[in-house]
Structure formats: structure tokens, C-alpha cells
Image (tube, rainbow, N blue to C red; front, top):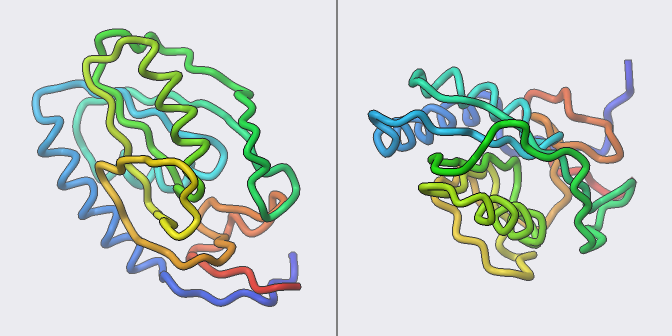
Length: 176
């Protein structure tokens, strides 16, 4: 097992669970009587999205897109690469983009632009984490979990160079 050090937990699994339930209650109300398409931004959102889907308990469909802007570093390159596109038709659908974290806003803006081109009925965004101090482009978050400081965040699906996704808490990765 990987030795974990230089990590400071600041959002616990219990806090995350309560926040997922709160977000699900808001989303469930807004999508009552609809069959939304939840689009997860891989890889970071997969744990959050699975918990959110279970908490929603409404008819819905799920699909994923995969994008990259970080590579192996801690800073966004600013260049967004679409690695996997939707498989589900999105035209005339109520789409909810599910993100793990919105940092610079480049990735979310890129995905929202791509999804708008598919003529959805509605398009909203849900992000577990928001880091407004790093925002480079404006992104309106319809369902926001936690606001986090300008630190590198790992755990609960978020990684650093593919490590730390398995952590049940959200942690700050300190300088190694």
C-alpha cells in the first residue's frame, strides 16, 4: 500500500456525505418529472457522481466525457484535450454536467461549450468543489458543494498524477 504523507484532511467523508444529500435534494426537486442526462467529467468526478446518482433516486441516464488539462503536474496547462466524448444523444435533453472541482474554469467552460452545441433543452452544472481564487474564466455553478482554498486537493476521486483518488476524505496535498 502506498505511504500517505504530507496530506491534511479538511473535508471529512461525513461532511461529503451530508453535502451530497443536500445537493441531491436540490437537484431532485429541479428535475422532478424529467429524465435528466448526468454527464460525468472523468476521471475525478466518478466517485462523487456515483454517490450523487444513488442519492438522487430519480429516473435518469448517465454518460461520461473524459478531458485532460493537467497531465502529471499540479498546474493546469490551459490546453483542454477531449479524450472521450458522449455516447448518449444529448439533443432535447436536460443535461447536468457533474464535476469534481472547478478551478480555473477552463475545463468546465470547454465542456459546457461542447454540450451547448448539441442543443439540449437545459444545461446545468453541479460541482462538489469550487476554487474561485484560481478562476480564469467565468463559470456559473448551479449546484455547488464546498468552496475550497487555493491548495492542491486530492481524495474522493481527485488525484495527483493518478495517486490519492482512493482517500475517503478531501485533503490538501502539501509540498513534497
